[in-house]
Every structure is written in structure tokens, then in C-alpha cells.
Length: 457
Image (cartoon, rainbow, N blue to C red; front, side, top):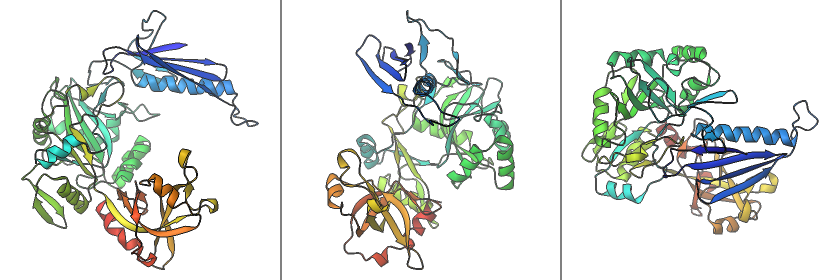
């Protein structure tokens, strides 16, 4: 079996991971060095039997094992020999991919086991109490793709994807060359060498369109440049400082101070660069339709502002925190400090919910819920009065709901909560709330959605 170790985890001892193939079986063993170990074995069968691309069980097992090795290597695991000595240096070739490891910053080429923090996905008590006391800082959450901007020792800018890739997949052209307008703006403001900024690649300075950004990122560099010239260039929204002028800021300088510095580094009027807007208690905050309010620091008013302006939401932080050793990690996985949490508004509407899985409407549950509702199909009425499928709704169902509504052919009006509406008017993260016996089906129209769709941009 091959053995790999990860030295830069949050525990004092290395993490151990072993893998080996025995015919069509792949065995994995993992745990903390000198500690109790866990193990599992997976069996594989032939695929594409009778076709030109047929693979035997052993070939399928080998491909899967190599994929697991690649994934672990990206996370900072290094192969060791029987004595525990590393077999490779900081640069490892796995299949067709070369992965760089290390625990030092060069600013020109970041190691791929390096990761920067992410906000927690759901609200916690710590931030709730901070917001209730009016002491939280609210950063507008931009709906784009995370990128890391570095300024090397010679003052040249570089862009890296969230996985720290310096180039798009399948190309040797650096990311920065895909955005000549950004490179020009960055050079113009003359940021200090040996600096790192955490950013979001967004559609426009004031407007988010994740589909547009995706079109730019998924295409080849030449087409991406042409696409932007025919439509509009993407922009870079900067939301934190990791290093500046060779000094580590992330984990050592308070969040509030870092945000103040960002506003100085990236002031307004820079063309395609901006800092992420932040709001604290007492600040004026736009609430939509040209209106505004004095921000009271509450989660409720933040939701109102996000809905009114069509923003994705906020990242709510403790301005006095610095994130400590959770700001920067070297084990290929971002840590999530408790002082940094996402807060997104929710929308509600009434839908016609149907469930008849044997006839292709809705789905059965899985596991212990296999005899009940897995998901309803939700419909709304168009202008002609016809039912139009909008979304599956499986979230929010309690154990009681799963059994209660398991009547093939059932149809009723139900309230559904969702995070946003896409361009094709489907729901993002829908959850069942409750039945609405007081509502008629003819009230379940698309007129409920345009406001949400417009607010989400």
C-alpha cells in the first residue's frame, strides 16, 4: 500500500492516509499518526461492457485509486516510504498534473495546499449576539467566483483560482492575461510588492451576474477576451487582505482595520476594481427603490436591504477578530472561523404541490424515508392559466410530513421558502414551510416571483 502524510493540519500530529489496490478492491486506511486508524474497502465492477471503452473491474479500481491520490495530493498529502521519509520534494507530478506544496509564500506561484478562510454557511449564536448588540460588521456578499490576487516581488500582478491554479484548466496562459483591463488597473494603483488580496470576480462593479462570469471563465482565453469586448469586461471586488508588503495581515490584524485599509487601497473610480461595501450600526444603508435607512445593525434590516437591492446577502463578521490560525491553512482545505458567517435573505411564495411518483410527478424518499415523500413537484400558473413546473421541493420536510403527504395523486397549495430565483424562474434551495388551505390554486401564479427574480438581479 502507498502511504501519505499531511503535516500542516490543525492537530499537532500528522494525518496518515494509506491506499492500495488488490485486484478489483481498493483498501483505504486513515487516521492520526500513532493513533487509532479507520479503514474501508471498496469493490468495483466492469463498466461499458461490450463497448470499445470497456474497462475491467481492476482497471476501474485503478482509475478510482489514482483519482483519490490526486485529490489527497492537492490537499497537501505527501507520499512517504516505509520509514516515514518523504519520497518527493515540494513539487509532485500526479498523472498529468503537477502540484506544488510548501508552507512559504513566493507571491509568484502559490503552493496548492495553501487555503484562505471561508465564512460559515449558517448563522451561529456568536454572531447573532454580536448583531443584536449592534457590534457586527456586515460585508456585502458578491455573487461571483473567488480569486486570489497577488503582487510579486517585482510588483507584477497574478491571479489564482480558488484552488490556487495559476492557469485555466488545459491552458498555459496565466489567468491575469484573460483580463487585460484588470491587469492595467492593478498596475496603475501601484500596490506594494509581496501582497495578497482575497477577491470575487463579478460581472460589474454594482451588478452581479454569476452566469455571465461563468461564461467568461469556462471558455478559452482568446474567446473570453473577445466575449468581454463584445459585451462588457468583468470586475474584481476585493474583500480581504491576506498579506501586504511582505507582512501577514490575515490572522494578525483585526478585520475592521483590514476593511479600512481596503477602502484606501481600492477607492472609488478605479474602473474595474472595487472594495466590497461594508456597513456597521449607524451607517446609511440603501434599502431599494432609491430609499435608505440608518442601519441598526440587525440581521432583519440587513435582509431587507439585500432584498431591496437585489444583493445575494451579507457576510457578517466580528470587526475585532483577526481569525487567528484559522485565517490561513496549509492542508488544502479552508477553515471556517466562527467570527465570519453568511447571511442570506429568504423569500416565500405559494405553489401548487403535487406528488405521484409512480407517474413521474415527485419522487420517493430514500433510506428510512423510502416509503414516503422524497420531493414534491411545484407548479405555478402562467398567463394562460396553465400549470408550469418550477422546481422540486424536498427540503424542509419533517418525518411527519414524509408520511402525511405520501398519498399518490395528492395535490394542494403549499408555502415554500427559497433563497433566490434563477433567470429561467426556477428556485434556488427551496424548502417546504406549511400547507396553505386558505389559498386557492388560482392564486399560485408567477406574479409572486418577479419581485424576487428582479431583486436577485
